[in-house]
Length: 186
Image 1: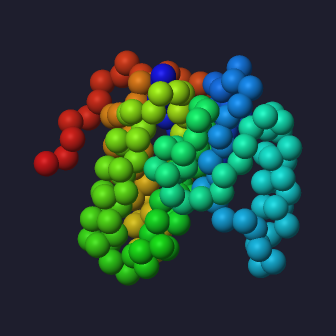
Image 2 (image 1 turned 120 degrees about the horizontal axis):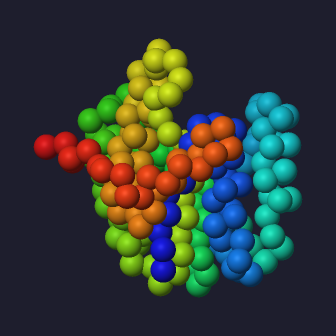
């Protein structure tokens, strides 16, 4: 059993790379964390999601949920989570936390604690995809900062609990698995 965190910027190739890590498995549980596109979403979002779905092997089962722990524990096959950014945004929305960064962080810590326990103890391979934060322009709104800070926290926690961590940049994969880590915050 191996746990792998795949980080990268938008359109870097991180999802395709993550899928390749589980390509040898005939059955995989693909956990989609993003919302189903609605009538107010841009048409290219629906097209992009459809393209990702069409690219997946036929034996892969898709589960759409924000309950990552339950999805992982109920699977009997390797798991691919795509992606943690949508999951964090969904958690913040679920707890109505956009106006309360302290409460949001407390609740997020609880959810990440559960996730890390499942992540470490599953008897099969698990891969999670996540956007790397803070590479663009500075966050202009408190909502953007809360999402950036929350996702940075989740990425750091999961990175520390992973066997492997890979960063995808411009279609290139950098293995961070043996890189030194920053000491945890007090």
